[in-house]
Image (cartoon, rainbow, N blue to C red; front, side, top):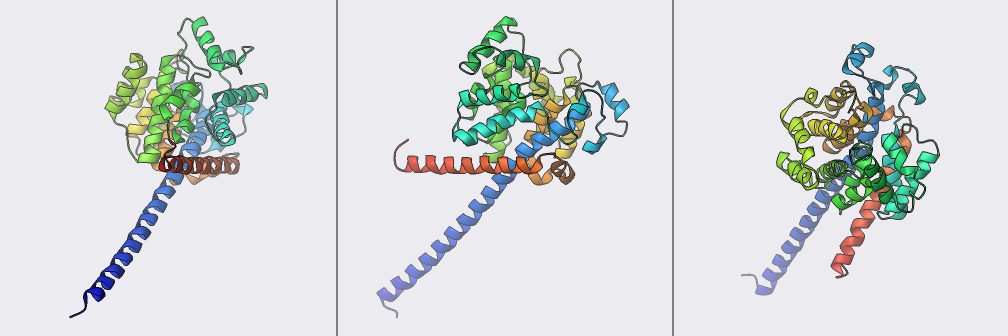
Length: 357
């Protein structure tokens, strides 16, 4: 019979080996989780940029015009017609939607926090340096003299001057990157939206899109109909019918090419929600939205960010990713954001562990 000491030594060694195995297993799972998050980070930003660049092909077209110019659909940037509007951009370039989103991303990385005055300053600088494609409402807000010192007040003034009717999609088009923050997503989405768009329909649109992306990237979770309706009702009941259309009806029900309201934030939100719940791949969702015309670059940019977060970078066609004019620069920016997020998470974790939060 082995002595008690020998038995205890054997059990101790077995426990140590099991513990080492468990630690290795946990590390492997953590590495896999990090790789998935990284793929979805890249998918979100590249998904937006690709949707934006491809959506330019049919921006401001009616469905009939889309059918006339692209009778066989569109598969590549080289097919984009070169009329007076589209020739302002090189094929494979994105528009103001992604430009303004990158202003936010650059601010997050440079400031290592959410600094709305710095974001506003970057918006204004971008506008002063050309701001190609900038929307009329966004321009009017940023053209106010004291915009950079009190941007939300400027946005409120312009909104009230328009009798609180304006609810354009110029904020929801750039909100995807907010969903890649680890915390305070709804609050940050609200504040960044209000830098130019004060209407509650715009704010609600931004919070919904950012929350969807955050849940996909960090929780691998789909927000269902009730989740989205719950967020919508916190901001404006007028959002609800567009959520209903996106969930229960086809894409055509959203009338994306309606001439008088194609830039409405709720049409863009509806298109993105339709893709989120019904598209079976990134490519399918983007092409259906692009071929619907209307404000197609914005609709496809927002939907593209969500689909990229859902399916990951590897499900975006290679020729679309690599065909972006500034693909390498974009990849570097996403890497910077990912590492900022990683450092921020570790800092918060250490503060929590030490009882400083």
